[in-house]
Every structure is written in structure tokens, then in C-alpha cells.
Image (cartoon, helix red, strand yellow):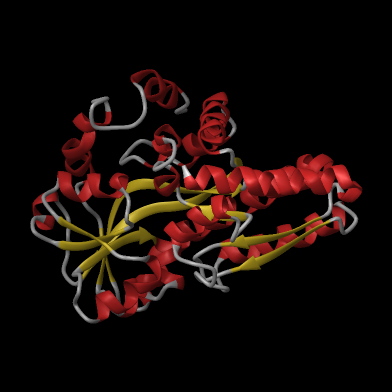
Length: 325
């Protein structure tokens, strides 16, 4: 209740500015948890420049990387309390406010990158984005590709039994617990900014992330094996707060168009890097292991259609699968 009250107060203040003749002038903070050298930050900076240019300077976006304005849970909360205006966030975090928005991030939900692109452009994604807006007041402006998540460890993992009892770091969300629980691992939520140290100190034995993330976070320095489980086709969404949307006024459509463009450019760059990185890791002396993916998929598949265990409906699941080429 406090969060909603604060949000309404901030929104009222923004609307007062518009009535006072200060419409469509906005100075927005875009927060995320990724390093300055990541593709996500690069394209956020590009988008900020494009937004300023295309709105004639009426909208200025400042980008804050590397958890400088808070960890992922904190920046999600920041949308409501007004400490941030825009964020990259995982659907697995947005799921806390509106469960179905995370459907694409469930294990083995996506068949391939083309399936993800079809989802990005689908009425299903539009409907789920509207559901999230209705639940929170905030707007999902775009979705970008994060990559297929793979398990890293200090020994080969090729089948589900190899993960039994494995202490593996996962993001702090119910969705991310599903896969390790299904294969008998011991999932341990740790903030993204703390994963390298946790691996280095042996707090956890493994973690899971896409190949580009494993590279730019340098997890390969403290893990000797990359196991190509590909268990989740991961996305990030770009969310703009209700208060910020009120400030944008007629510039909102321009901002959304730029963010969609930036998200698409980032997605293609991440996907391309995924195709090249396995060989790069081998050159660094890392063991890259193929796995029995069918066995991993069989371990989680019964859960995906059990409405008592997932936040989306059977109808939404069937619409998602119908998008596969």
C-alpha cells in the first residue's frame, strides 16, 4: 500500500508539471546491473543519444551501469519509489509483480533464436506487457536477447545426475530455482555483482549464464568447465516507470521506437557473439562440454504445463509454442 501511495504521489507531481506548461521535458535515470563494457550498456548509451537527438533535447537519459544505483531487486523497487526511471531487468524479476511476463524465461520454453524473435513481435508479448502495466503502472517498452544460459563448473557436467547436490548460484527468483531443483542441485541465490567472488571463494561451486556474460564477467577465470545445457533462452526487458511515462507526454512514442531499435541491435549482437564464443573459450584453455540436452529437458518438461507450478496459463503456453517455426 505504501508503494502505491508513493507512486500515485509521484505521478500527481509529474502531471502537475505538465499542466504547468513543462510538458515533455524529462531527465531520466536508466539503471542496470551490467558492466560498462557490456553490449547492454553500449546500446543503452546509443539509445540515450538517439532519444536526446530525436526529441530535440526534451528528453535526457543518463545511464547508470554496474549496479551503481542498486542491485536488480533494488532497481525494480526503484521504479515505484522514484529513485530510477528506467531499467533493464530480467522477466524473472518482473514476474514478482506479474507472473506471465516471465513465460519466455522458463526452461526449454524457446526452441531457438527465431522463436524468440517471433515472441518479441507477437500479440502474446503485447498482451503480457499490457498485463504487467496494469499490475504495476510501469511500461515494458522493449525486449532484448540475453542469451542461452549454460552451467559453468570445475568439472564436466553432461547429464542431470552430474548436478545432484551441486551448489549453484542462481538469481534470486522462483523461476531460476526451477531448473536446478528439477535436476537435484542446490540452488543458492546471490546478487549478480557478487558472483565472481562467490565462485573464487568457494561459496558456490557453479553458476549459470549465457556465454557473453561468462566472458564479460570473467567467470571463466574461476571456473574450468562450460557445460552447454542451454536450459533457458534468457531475455531482458526495458521498463519505464509510470511517473516517467507521464513526463514524456508526446515524446513517449519516439522514446519507445528508439528503445525497440536499440534492443533489436543488442539482441543481434549478443546472438552473433554466442555463435563465436565457444571456440574462444576453448582457446583460453576452458573445457566446453556438450551435454545430453534431452535428458535435462525431460527433467523439467512436466512442470511447464502444470498450472499449479507456473505463473502462466495453459492457453498462454500454447500460444507461445505456436510461435515456433
